[in-house]
Length: 369
Image (cartoon, rainbow, N blue to C red; front, top):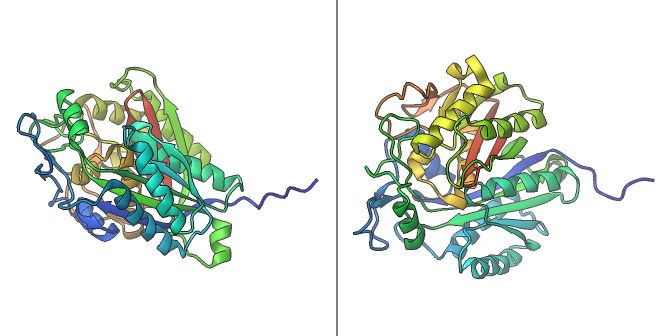
């Protein structure tokens, strides 16, 4: 019996929108991450931080309400994709008392853009948006939907800032220094982002040129500790291997890694060990950086913000800089991108990695269109 489902296609990205501490659109974000000399961190004036150990973050000067920020990124992504009407929306947000209200407002705005509404809300900490992208790819690849839109947003607010500060997760020196000696923690940042994930067959039928291809994705769970990663990075390694296997891509074909790189001493070490387990001796020639060092950690929106950065790097060949560098940690041993703008031969594939409290890990493998 023949199936009535539409033919499946490979997932590609046909639209993106982003709002970061550097403003609206991918261009100012790409310029900042590739240059590396103008990280977005400054003194927090949005709320009182006088009693906090850390007083810096990467913030918009005059932020709109969260739902409005998400809808702005969503409108840009849909306009670029010309537009993906009728597509379901997968939304990643921080879980708090306002989540339902924000999701409902985004749903109303999404309907006005011609989308089918919010199909699912993801609140799974710092892998929320990457999990949504992986689900969107599965929906598209299975033929259930020709296109799915993913959006995420997080604007730094006093409660979350206080919680991270009290837990000593924030960098006491006010600099996010991934994989560097002297690193002491992360710094938070504002972000809203959206991408249109579409079957390549559907994009071709509409005459829309893809921005990049989602070649593979992988997810894993450590359940090692409520907030500390497994020291050996085994969960991250499993997620990366899963993404590579799904894509049929060998480790040697990966040309850049946008690492999770939060600046945490233990997290960065575990991630470096994971990369060494997957890439072995080839790791010495693989460029690695964490774009968080420039735009900050946007929690539930981080994975989508970093995916936008990674797609941009694939298209331009200008790799994001690993900012905040003080000197090598002899146990890390990564080929870090330390100066910019660095123009490399355009990599064919790049990995965007994220990890969250509770041991959740995601890997998105992006291939040039």
